Image (cartoon, rainbow, N blue to C red; front, top):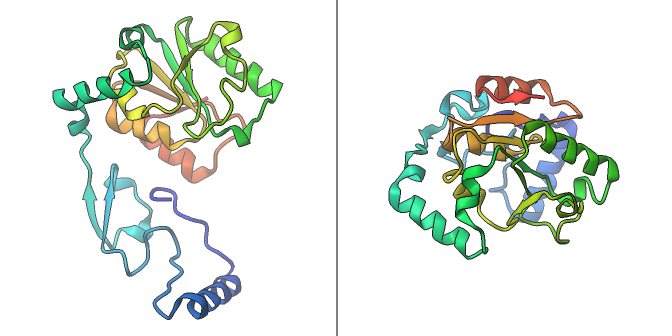
Length: 215
């Protein structure tokens, strides 16, 4: 929402919704046109200040720097975090690609999706890994380990992983904010959106601005 905004509601529907919530919560309630546009919000802290939705530009916009993530102490802290997940840090140096998956509710145990994941991994290199969504409930739902795929700990912080990957690594996702995070923290990595169903025009333009390839 920070960059592509929220699609405006029908005027009548928005007015009625706003009225009902004022009755329920109090007259202070506001229904902003997009996330962050409320008059109760003074500042917005963003990774890409020049690309935010126009409805947020009237705020006090503070650009965030990713340089803190590359600080030596933060990198060492990331290693400590990952070590709690029994992850061999050295193995990250050999990865050609990391595929991040959406929440399991979007694919379940769909065999077509499983085939798509395996084809994608094969396309980007032999030494590739998959990271399930941190809120997945069943271990290796797509049975990827059966095919020799390396699984990164789903619950591990993706930001911690990013700092330890070699420049040759390609990060692949669908339309996840993971791609935006990757481009911000590690602008040296290749970032690809495998959005088979397509993306809307605003998101497509945002990805192009950030040099995220749509495959």
